[in-house]
Length: 152
Image (cartoon, one colour):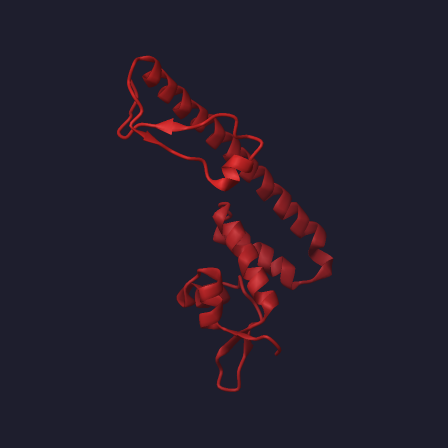
């Protein structure tokens, strides 16, 4: 296997522990990991790419059962492309709904901060947007926050 990666290298590259990698393999999320003559796991660059996609599914809230269903469908090959596309479309829609809810909640927080500022309370800490926030077409205002701000 050319460019084979050890479990430690994959763990370091992905930020996932070796324990988690073994669990993902046992759960069927990572399939067909190669082995050395001594039985040590050897991951291919394609395995690392797949792991990174699994981590994106996890980060966007897909349950393990959903990831397992997607991985099992993927293992069946080309015949399941339509089913996989549908799974991802449904997940995309769920993620978009989560983003919309987060945006609504963020707007309420920003409005509350503006309320406190209008009432004469000073801002004690300013939160700078990250680089990705600065580049976002959705970032139209600067966010300021006070420590310990609650509702009134």
